[in-house]
Length: 83
Ligand SMILES: [Zn+2]
Image 1 (cartoon, rainbow, N blue to C red):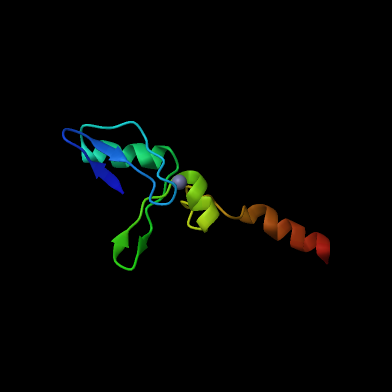
Image 2: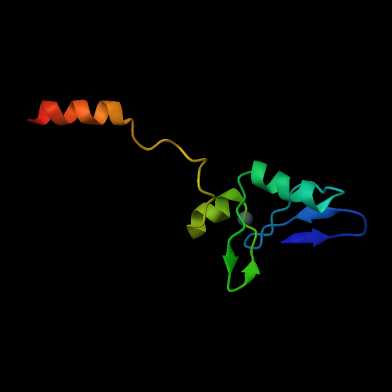
């Protein structure tokens, strides 16, 4: 969760309680979590925030940036070699 304090927002892991440095704006706190590899899966209509370690442990880690899965120009060539 993002802990609302008097004049700042503190990203807080819902599993281990680890915190990141406070931010004065909520969006900055969210951005900071993303940069740190945290993930925020929605479970049962409730958004949970997990640090990178807990997200990995719980199997809900943030998906890595989309990668091009296959280089098709190589794929067609290797097929020819199999034949
Ligand atoms: Zn954690």
